[in-house]
Amino acid sequence: MKKEIDLSRSVQINDGLTQTSADGVNMAFDTKYGIMFCAYMTGGHGCYGESRGRISLSYFPAGQPTNMRAIDVAVGHDVYCQNILSLGEGCVRVIYEIDSRAEATHYTYYRDFNYLTGELSEPARMNLRREDGSVVPLTTAEQFAYLEAHGYHNHTFCRTEQISFGGHTIFDGGDGYHYGTITSFLAEPILYRSSDHLATLEFFAICPHVAQYEMDFKFLDGKIYAIFRTDKGEHGSICCTTSPDGGKTWTDAIELKNSIGVRPRLILHNGRVLIGYNIENFNTKNFPPILAPRTQIQLRLWDTDTPNEGEIAVDLHSKYGIVNICLVDIKGDCYMAYSCSEIPLECYNGMRRLRGKSAVKYIKLGDLTE
Image 1 (spheres, rainbow, N blue to C red):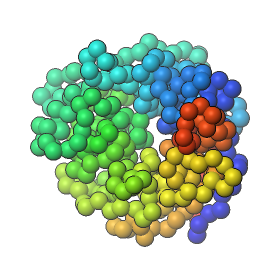
Image 2 (cartoon, rainbow, N blue to C red; image 1 turned 90 degrees about the horizontal axis):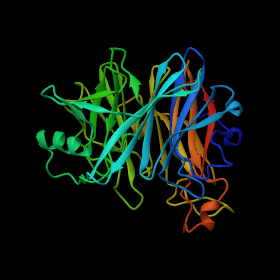
Image 3 (tube, rainbow, N blue to C red; image 1 turned 180 degrees about the vertical axis):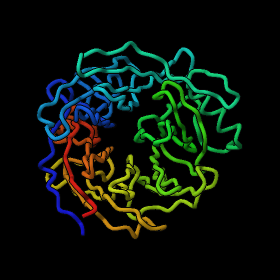
């Protein structure tokens, strides 16, 4: 049964006074202290919509977002594409990327924040353990070389494009590894694992379907479930695929009906696969138009081989936009963060249409399997 949820209960969790841009939120939960950490791009003063240049971190008790505090993790002209991993004991690792124009490549860094002490570690560069055992910095060149070495020669990956590290939820596989994906503007997603909290990655599989920027996956009952963004159609689309053998083979991609190309999400929620994605909806009522029809999302339970037939758990619309959602399950309740443009400053700062990325909102959705 589809649940009715009032989005007006959402709470803004970025500093709207100094941050007029807030995009690409990723969340991590500390189980010991009950703290939710949210990392996102904020640009700087006078930046609106999707803006590079600053990565910020908000943190608050998961059930009390009005008690939010925020700090800046990284500042610089080409700082962007962030993600986050809980280290436990009140600490989180915030990952972000820097475009090294002098070397025509992109490096990924991380800093650790301890909310108990307020300490922020010095930046450290993320590494990659190659198949031959050697350890090198993680760069776009290494990403490209791995794809080439495994027979992917005809994709439209751009050597100077970013490593899209922020488009997935980093998760604990319960086997001593953390897992996730890296993609790019248009490339086959690479699945990685790490035994040292993402200080060093190991690539272990490639999904043969070309994704645009983002792919999210999880393991359930020996199968990989994956959802990814594509550039198909005027506004893009979202597709699903599975692998029964740890990433060696994959099913054909299934396009979700009426979906559009905005970052999707996939989590395990009460033992079931829950997918979240934008569907086409231009309805902004009396609000300025949103760039592409990014005003509605569906959260759907994926229980069969055909995700389009899964039960719709939640159907949400906002005339202010719902962009780049992030989902977290805490003890059977689902929590969501997303970007929106409730204050349409972008309209007055050179944007033809709003990008829907001026603020980050947060809401408890509860148990969506009831």
